[in-house]
Amino acid sequence: MYNLMITDMLLLTTLSVIPGLWCGFLGWKCLRSSKGMILTLLTLPSLVCAALLAINGSLGTGIAILGVFGLVRFRSLPGSGPDIAAVFLGMVSGLLFSTGYILAAVAVTFVLGLVLAAAAGLVQRITGSWTVRILIPEDTESFEPYTRTLQQFGKSVRLEKVRSMNMGTMYELEYSLLPDLSQNARMIEEIRRINHNLNVQLCEGSSQLSL
Image 1 (cartoon, rainbow, N blue to C red):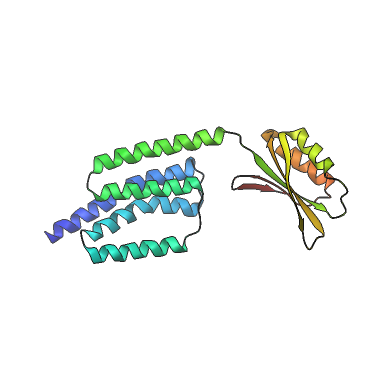
Image 2 (cartoon, helix red, strand yellow):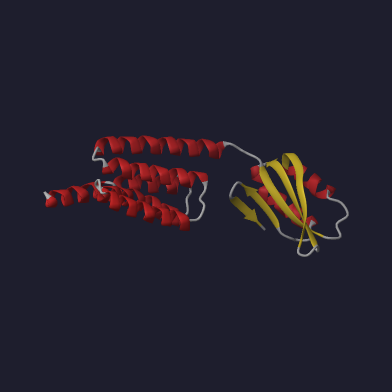
């Protein structure tokens, strides 16, 4: 019976590599995750499946594994929303495979993956508000030239914040706008022309384009 249990654990853990490949593919193609996150998604279902199979009704083993998971969570860096969703998908896949319902686990993982991919594709098509951060010299008399320049390349331009930088020797202007994405390079080039080639940062969410 002990050998049969070992065989079952190896079989289920090996089969759980399949949803790992699916999750890794989603992270690579649809979510544009980092290499580290893709590696995590590839291995997470198998690791979760093996951990849950190792518990097998043992209270002490369950507490030990929960402690390990808590330590890993404590040491991990915050991730983006899509990455967190993909991690949960990997954990759900490992949990389903550990129950032994292989066909149901494959079907649920595949369907949830398609939903995640479709949602990611839909969000990427939505043009949201962008942020432009511009460093300017301390002796700048007016912010109006920067506002007019941004209005040439986008809509709904608004100065959100002004703060001093580098011990008061510079200012940072923070604008929000809906840019013409095909004109981003020209917009940054024009801004650098009037701010004496100081730093310009264009951001959407966690992504940034700095020159």
